Length: 285
Image 1: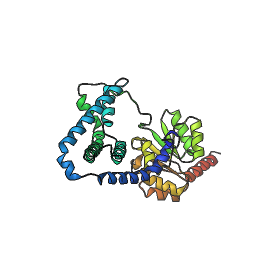
Image 2 (image 1 turned 180 degrees about the vertical axis):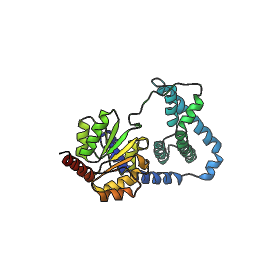
Image 3 (image 1 turned 60 degrees about the vertical axis):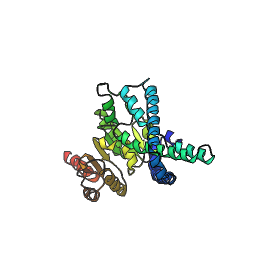
Image 4 (image 1 turned 90 degrees about the horizontal axis):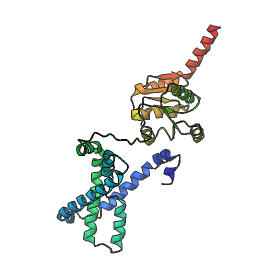
């Protein structure tokens, strides 16, 4: 929670994902080993009743509170997203059971209810828009909430060296929105101080790319000086965006040939451009 308030939250989140997945698996295995399947089958009507009652109660409370300042659609989506019983309740339930505050049969019913609500949550969230349309089919109001990091039709610049900065200036003059992803902490602070849009993180991390909404990007400009990292970054971003939207800057023809093997065609060779510029200067004289 402390790291989430810092400027390095995107990179920190990307680094912690493997540990989260591992511990999450252990957590659910532990919960599953406590469940008595035959007992749950015999008590299924009670579990179902308890599940529906809790979810409806949570929905009413959350919807009522959110609707004070938000539209019906936003309130409905928020309430549907939060109606599940959180996994923290399992920790509280375990403490209560350990201290003999709740009998074993009741704890079994509560564990099953909590787990079922968590199982339902992904399906509810996946179909939020559909559910909102069903409940509000006669309501034509639009959501007014705009998520700050919901970029769309933007240009992503990977590597904010001199080349990246020049591209950013040109885009800014044309009124085109861009977003930089920078892994060098010094460069990141420099970009941030001048008020330019930037995310700190490693472009090889899919979580960082998703934060930048790479799937909705107009173009992705890769201006990384390290040839090995450049190749791996190009490999990674090809999973999220088609090659026709990727523009890569390389230093030599050899680097261009390597990147071209990935199917990327928009490749600028720095040495070729410089030699052409020098040739024009000589011929103009």
